Amino acid sequence: MAADTKPAHTPGPWEAFKPTRGPERFLIRTPGANRRHIAEVPLSYDLIRDGNTEGNARLIAAAPDLLAEHQAWARAFGAALLLAMQGDYSEVDRLGRGLVTFQDGKPVLRSEAIARATPA
Image (cartoon, rainbow, N blue to C red; front, side, top):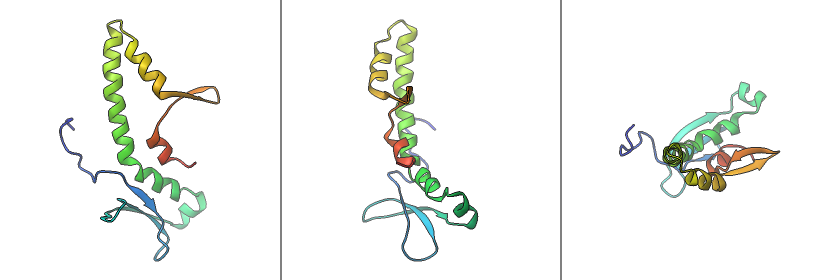
């Protein structure tokens, strides 16, 4: 898809919501007054046994944010790598300091979208 082409999906944000009535399921929808139904993740017997239904719903709901964040990283790091190939590492250093943290001694990219897609 070209950078100036509109996405062929409903723009985010999306949210995972478990209704209190009707069949047990998670709905993926746009938030706010003008809610729009995106998808449904049913609570089938197989999913209840493995406990992945809510996680699947959260991942689907985070899809627009994950895509946008990935596209932003690709632009930023692509430009920084081009500079680094010319011997200028300042942009790589700047981006790294703002995005990398450590968990259990391992480097981890800070990501609001990934945090939203995974359980707390």
